[in-house]
Length: 88
Image 1 (cartoon, rainbow, N blue to C red):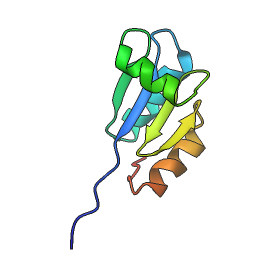
Image 2 (image 1 turned 45 degrees about the vertical axis):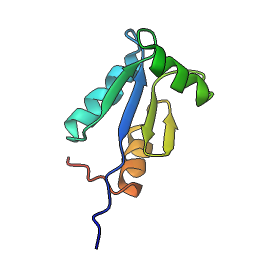
Image 3 (image 1 turned 180 degrees about the horizontal axis):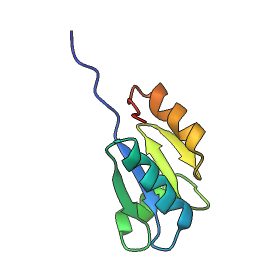
């Protein structure tokens, strides 16, 4: 039986976004691995952000699912639904 692959977690951010910093702190406190992509300095990140038709940051991608904005309860549920354990 093949082991289910854990979805990638990506956080699209900008340098001065307070909610982005909160989302990153929350993921770190839950010990969830993620990749941060700054849409102001990374052209690839900006292109992906535009493709999602997002209007603001943070955008948190968990596999193929996305959370627009930061809401700890919704983020926890999104991670749980993706099979990612959240500690704390």
